[in-house]
Length: 109
Image (cartoon, rainbow, N blue to C red; front, side, top):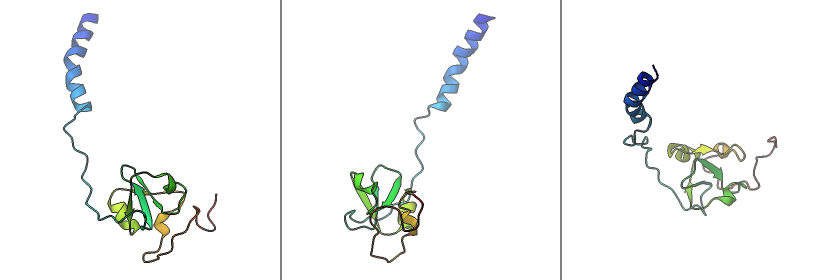
């Protein structure tokens, strides 16, 4: 019985592993979005990160190799999600002023 189990595992394992570790599958392509210089952009994100922030957010200060976005829609179209601390999706389109210091007024800390 033990030999039969070993034989089944040896024969089935390569097929099972092939499905688990398929290296030929490509990540879903995100649309190309035009970025702007991060030092003038109201919204910033790390080039290899997942989250976008208001430029004045304390988490944005630690970003290295950052990208800039003019609107939250552009950042989300590029595959980024909003920071839960500074809530950049609440930034009004066309507002040049960027809040600094983190959370918006009235937000729970």
